[in-house]
Every structure is written in C-alpha cells, then in structure tokens.
Length: 110
Image (tube, rainbow, N blue to C red; front, side, top):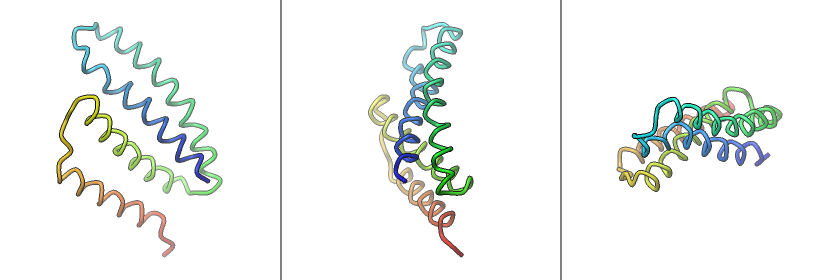
C-alpha cells in the first residue's frame, strides 16, 4: 500500500524539476527549455501512471488526487527551499496544515 505514495513522491520530484528547474537558466532559449522539460516530464509520467493504477486498488480517484496535490506541494516546498533558497514561512506551514485537513476529510468514512 506504500508503493503509490513512493511513486507519487518520485513523480512529483521530476515534475517540479521539469516545471521550475529551468528558472535558474534564464539565458537558455525557451525552445530548448521546453524540450528539456518535456524530456524530464516523461519520467514523471512513467512513475505517475503506475502510482495511480496501483493506488486505485486501495483508494478512490478523489483520494488519490487530493493525496497527489499534498505531495506536490510538499515536494515543491522542499525544492524551492533547497534549489532556490526561498524561505519557508509560517503561512506556508498553515497552508500545509489546511491541506492535511483536506486529506483527512477525503479519507474519513462519514
């Protein structure tokens, strides 16, 4: 049951690098950045598709999507802090707490 989460984390790492990593290379031609990012995103999909297939054996599509969004933002927070040296602020933490609340509401059996 942990495999979908591990695959989603790895998938989001590739996605974040593809979408934001190029921002440090502003002198590189946009067409080159698009091609490189597209190549990196290929590996995102190679991990994301199996993650959703495996995860759907245990979770609903809605549960997978909400989990995906939380993982996306968590990976992005770490990436932006380490790669871009941006500060992680209290309001970012508050937003993550609200997202965890969204996961709770999605997984809770009412």
